[in-house]
Length: 279
Image 1 (tube, rainbow, N blue to C red):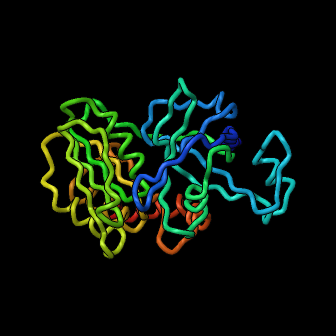
Image 2 (cartoon, one colour):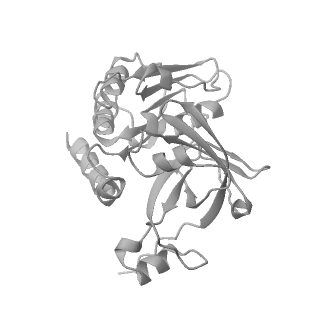
């Protein structure tokens, strides 16, 4: 049997905080720059993402930063944690990278870091990766997600040309968490404040109730894994959308840390797909 090629290690960059902005009660924007982003580039995707690297307190790593070497030479308790975030915007002229963070007080790792970040702070990041951009040939676009998918949905809406038909469903905590998005007038943005309802419940109901426009859809559906599972079933089995017209995955899972979810995410997604193919 031929040997499988090793997975390419994402390129590491060290970025410096240029400025921050509180967009809404639960979202903070951090703009990164500095010489460490001199070789950073992104492609055509609107869901480009990077992995922010957070070392344990008191731990430093040899230069140049090398994740493979760290995992090889250091015990697991000294490995850095990493958190995946969508590239909200990349200014190739100014070499500035914009990332929006969901913040719920001291909950989590990256959110509290973003809330405390000040100009001059540094952070390492790996990437970018990505895989979705709105198909210009699609008759219409469906974009669905909670706060974790909001940056990618917003970037996708801003990529659409004038006249493009789109429905975007975005679930947020409260009405104050809605944002201004520079979408074409032909795109309809449905903001869905939870107001205490379970995560994803409003998204599933809204997509089920949508009177789908005519023609082939290109769909982007990301967010909490349980809600995504229900939406995948609805879109694949009840609406008959082919797999190749769907970008769909659980960004996170209720009750699991980021590390625990990443450890089972691929297997979980494959199992869901098998179950739904067999239905």
